Image 1 (cartoon, rainbow over the protein chains, first blue to last red):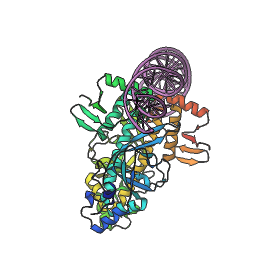
Image 2: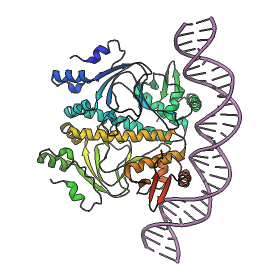
Image 3: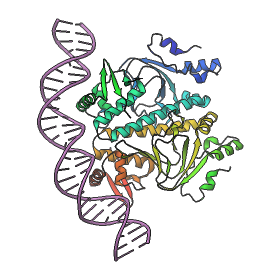
Image 4: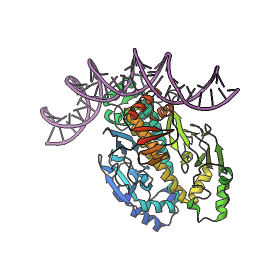
Amino acid sequence: MQCLCEKLSADFPELSPICIGHLWLFRDLPNETLKAMSQSAIRYRKQRGEQIFLEGDLAETMFLIKGGRIKLSKLSESGNELILGYRKPGDFIGENVLTDAGTYPCSAWCQEETLVCGFSRQQFNALILEHPHIGLQIIRNMSERINWLSDQVGNLATANIEDRLYRVLQNVAKEHGAEDERGYILNFTITHEELGFLIGAHRVSVTRAMNTLKHNGKIAADGKSLVIARIPQ
Amino acid sequence: MQCLCEKLSADFPELSPICIGHLWLFRDLPNETLKAMSQSAIRYRKQRGEQIFLEGDLAETMFLIKGGRIKLSKLSESGNELILGYRKPGDFIGENVLTDAGTYPCSAWCQEETLVCGFSRQQFNALILEHPHIGLQIIRNMSERINWLSDQVGNLATANIEDRLYRVLQNVAKEHGAEDERGYILNFTITHEELGFLIGAHRVSVTRAMNTLKHNGKIAADGKSLVIARIPQ
DNA sequence: ATCATGTTGTAGCACCGACTACATAACTGA
DNA sequence: TCAGTTATGTAGTCGGTGCTACAACATGAT
């Protein structure tokens, strides 16, 4: 079938196979429904550094990430940036369009060139009511997010920066990286400053902690990638 | 219609009107479906201090809270308890039954006498597929939870204990307490130790912070309740 | 009453980590 | 190739908070 994504994504490096247009869950839908649906969605193709939405914006659209990587962050009242996590192709962001409150609780920034597929509240509502499988998919996705956030809360509550850093690196690598016998491979760069925003620590402290982690063999640089050793058990 | 909840809840103090048995979204369902559904669910009535499930348990059941209050907590690797939040009647817990991983990311403890309604993964799946409205309801609920957790992450990342405490108190009171012209009223007791688990701080530090908050007029004791002043703007 | 248990208040020491400041890479684009 | 920018490394000071220890209550059971 005809999906707008395909036109936009002609030269796009890696693309998620998950698409409202040809999602497996739509296999058995009549063609014209599919077409209507996939064409009613708004597509955005954005460059690194651009935003999808900002914390506090009226939440009127939710998005499915087709390709790229998106950073969810918010501002702490001390004015510092605070990273809530990264989202990858196949993930949904901005699901709280359905909440009454109706503003995004965080901002979404593109870390790389990114392709997303947006749905309005009404479209989204209708979509779920008509195709409950999508609801299930979203629930699973949100559940992962809750797990991650719970983990983060656990992390942040333990004082030690070194441990916090190690665990966050593991989580990020587990979710977004590859894996081999040495451990998880994180193959996109995160600056120390960003890591600081992620674990709520000062940049300088991150640098220190990174060095001791390297020194203790818990992490290792491999060209541009970072190898995070699994916890030996 | 006949709902098991009613039998169990004969003498229960306050009960959530939300019930799979007579949820508004079921209004227009045929009576026998309703009956079958509400009777297939497992009901638990538990006392203060009992658990619904434990972190790491195989996640096979999700629950709708009918009455009472449930504390979600986990153990940090330092072995400390860490409270992720409280859930009230009408909320869902254990939604990650749908995740592949399949273990609960946290434990659920009853803070008071509590009545819950449990559904197996299969029941839950079927329920959502047949009645997508329930899916929507759950998505809304999870979205609130994500907001709370995001907020918590923000809180924990800002170093200052006093601010952390104040904000957590506000959030808890906003969600679970009453409200009058003085501010939010928290009418169930949380010990300083619990507050410590909630903000990831030492009990002694909580006591200190509570006193300065009282001294600065940000909070005030009113018998057994706690009045949390709104931020004046 | 008495005891046991749980909660809150207070003090002092030690230490982690925020912060500032500056040096040294590494990268980017003319 | 050079300058401008961004990322990383290192040092020293200082405040916040963890931790231990103990005292003062409160509550409830026997």
